[in-house]
Every structure is written in structure tokens, then in C-alpha cells.
Image (cartoon, rainbow, N blue to C red; front, side, top):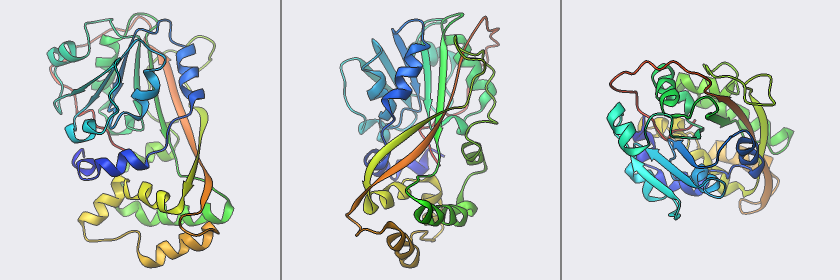
Length: 278
């Protein structure tokens, strides 16, 4: 699946919305220490950049060197390209020793993982008992009722090219496996809702859509999802010219928990940790 994004790393970096500060402040308020973060499937560093302003050290990993080339270079962020199936020895070499990480984050990618194996690695590397894992997704962009209706129709038409696991995003991560304890002050692990609000032109929104994995899959099959007819439907609902800007809202859904006194069952490899998206 990583190949879907190798072809469009620069588009991904330019088009993806920035996560809200409130999201990171909430996560930080639930983290006992602010020393080390492992940002899994960091892509081009959207989350790592914000985490770097709060935590002493951020380790951003991805299986795509191409994606990492577009990540911002910051003094307290270290990017590592990991092998598709990361071993315990590679985890220890590139991330840290057992119980050495304060926070593990996964932005818009948890649905792609083999959860049992990934969570085993998370429980091994997080500090016990208060190390935190935070994973979030965001769903379809919203502007107004008319435009949102066009987006939903377009999304439905893209379904034949959409991986089944993206259904976990459609469900706002409410049904994703998440075997962790509630953090202090919370009665469950979420999902907790936040919002991204971003001023965008329609042209920028088209670029965002072109970064979807379903768009790339359809394109590889010779199908142009953003046909002239579809783009005209978007333009009519936008009520501005293509360069006219409007406020676009992306709902964000966060699952957050702490490791507790986890029992670790080590295994030699884990499934790919990919910087992927819908």
C-alpha cells in the first residue's frame, strides 16, 4: 500500500490539512512526561512538526524515503525510514529500548496496520504504566449543505477503488481495536472529536482529493475520478471561482489511552507501518 503514496509524496505534503493545536494540547495534557515521542507513519511530518513544539525529542518513522524527504527538518526531530516489517532489533535500534517512550502517535494511518502486532510493539516501547498512545483520523471535508452533498456523492463513487480498512475511518475509529486503558480524567478511550478549520481554494481541495489512495488506485486502473463533469459539479456547489477561498472543516476523531501494566508478547516482525490515508 505504501506504493500508492510514493507516486504522490509532494502532492500529499502540499495538500494535507494541518492538525489543530487543541488536539496536541489535549494529548500533551494526558502525557506524564514530555521527553520522547514516536510518530508512526509520519509521512511528510505533519504531526511531527507540531509535536516538536511540545516534546523534547520526536522520532518520526515511515517506510517511504520519498515521503520523508518532504518532512520539515527540525533540530529535535529525527526521521527514520524503517523496513516494511520492522523487527524487535530494528525497533530498539531506531526508536528506543523497552519502556523508553512517553507517547506514540499515529495520524490518519492506524486503520492500515496489523493491530495485534503493532500494539504489541507499542506496549513494549511505552513507559509503564502511564505511557500514552494517541491515534486519530479525519473524515470528509465540510463546507455547507450543498457542497457537502457533492462531496458525499463523489466519495460514494470512489468506493470501488477504496480499501476496505478505510471503513474504520468512516466509522470515526469508533470500531477500531484499541486495547488500552483510559487516560487520567477520561472514562473511556474515545473517540474524542476535534476540528480542523482551513481556508482553501477549490483548486487546493482538488489537490487534496488527488492525494487519496482511492484516487491513485483508480488512476492506475485508467479511471479519472475527477472527470470534467465531476469537477463542474464541485465548481457549481463551491459558489466561488476555483481560486476563491472558503473555510473547510475536517472533523477529527481521536482514540487515546495509556499502556498500564501491559503484558508483552514479543514476535520477530510486525506488519508495515505505512504513512497512508484514505
